[in-house]
Length: 555
Figure 1 (cartoon, rainbow, N blue to C red):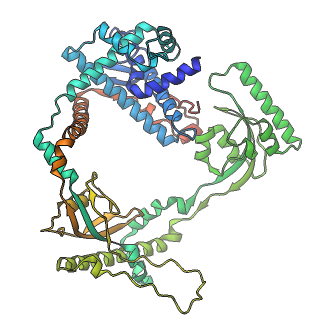
Figure 2 (tube, rainbow, N blue to C red; figure 1 turned 180 degrees about the vertical axis):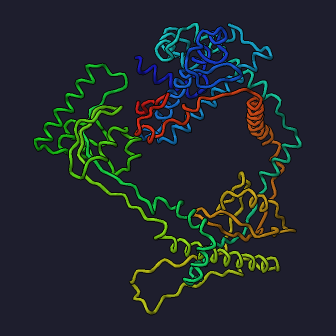
């Protein structure tokens, strides 16, 4: 019953608001609480200070763990990468600060929520309704005591604070307006469609024609050493490959908060497994029979080949340190990690491969020089096509599709090498404006703006456009208007109110963001940076523990 309620509560909480969870602690122990204003919790570690009001570390960790649980519940793979956790921590602290600013502002302008309004809102919450959609008081008490781990009195005052913050948010967003003239302009803007004839020219299309002598490469290297060094750093994974190991482990899990008896039991099982392996038992057989790692048990406990940081992030520093200290074929002792006990065998060791810059600087310099020359050829060809297009020719006329011809020197069934890419005229088809995106041309606001500004009277842009190539480097785009469809104004009246709501949603969100940004700029805010940065696996390997360790993420 409780598990079912926890699941229902989690689902409802995600639907309601992440901020709703935060207020359990913000009201009880955090910014704006009576306890803080009276100094009752002043000894607690602080995550942030907002205009002199603290947000406690407990508040932060509770909110972070809840967000983490909800995130993991909605994704197939277990666990989050370190970078994802860091980003989540940043989002949580920012959310806490923003919620605090809203409460402070609500107090300043005299907003209030009555007991009757609060109670009516609670009784409508999906979390507390029975199967017949009626408020269930027993379910209500059980959820707030077991899931939120607080009292009804604190919870109900927390709910009031949440409603208060929402009202303040509503007051801020209420100022947003949309006039009828703006609606018509927006309708015309977004319902207009263009068909663009275009060609993309990249340096890759001209790479085969680019040449450079050894003397030219040496001269380029001397004049562009900083660029060569930067290219070397960008290819660090290619030139400096870290040591990697593959292990097969037998894992005995100790869940967070496990009793001493459970921990002792798991340790004893690990020791017995180690004894069997020392006597000659196969690691794969032991893993299949005893391991509690569901992901690897049927594979004989085999983990993928991993570097030190990867192994640390997944299984903790103790396992990584032990694995990298052993040689291929060696057996570990019993290793204790944050997740349990491991016994493992090193299956494979791939030593680090370090290629010094001096060994590849000529290669890198040649590549940069050839890329530069190929890019110059691409730009020159784009400018030529643009000039001829403005003189009256279409791109299709300028770039006819080449006829396919067989190479008589090659047998008919011989495998064919992929042809070098060639400039080719294409059309987008009639498309509407999509936030700076044009199909087949990608996301480039300046290019999209120029394309939709074209008319049948003025079908050419003012210039060749330089855009980013998704695979790296630059591309040059030459285009013209092939066709344009104006909006059907007869449909405007029907679409008007839906469009008004859509624009208002965006403007209200922008209004709130602007208010929060201005308020934040004026506020006195200090954050505990250790909560946001001290989770580096390197720090863990060196024995420096974070002030607020990352919670275990496999619930």
